[in-house]
Image (tube, rainbow, N blue to C red; front, side, top):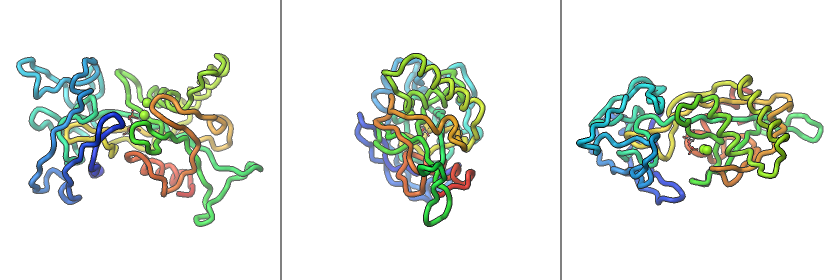
Length: 284
Ligand code: RP5
Ligand code: MG
Ligand code: MG
């Protein structure tokens, strides 16, 4: 499990909550520390009446709420990729350590909140179609479909939350479409063709890059993000590489971006991209 290391939480609509600083050596639960976390669950999550948002089992007395921790229940999969998590004080404990915040912050579920991240890549090419090499590393440069997130304004992979009873393979396609393929004026025929390409390449040509904890700014001691990350690479500019992208729901912008280590990216997304570049022998 990687170290939980975020120091603040917040979204565009809600001010950032400053977390008490936790020295690296004190992140793990077994290190002794005079720990005084802040309890924070956003108004939106606390007052939600959506069936898919958990009730807080600590406060719903006398109405007893029994959440099937560590299991795949009818609403969502509450299992972690990091094995069985502990229940402390009636709620799950973040397996990666202290975050400075208790409660759920902006997250709907206690325990793992599952997401999926599609990394769509192609080679950067010149007008003749040859791969462009980086001057320092002499390795070819990859490009990936990137968004700028509405909430934090950072560059990110166009991923999203796994919805109620959704398969991860469906989340990957849905989020990619929603966040990067927004063409309101496109004809029905072109839309149909475009979606067929996505469906075909996403269902047949992906490589799993990572599954597990994401160092997301919304993580708390009791709720955290985990993701399944896939790379869909178009080696010969046959299908995905030809896509034109346009920002949709959660993005202010969507574009093909050169991949390298200096890009400031949301959450653990740089770690995921690094893995892709290593796998394909690309510049990083
Ligand atoms: C990150 O948050 C995941 O890696 C994924 O990219 C994203 C999912 O949350 P939303 O984009 O739906 O806010 O932890
Ligand atoms: Mg998203
Ligand atoms: Mg989304």
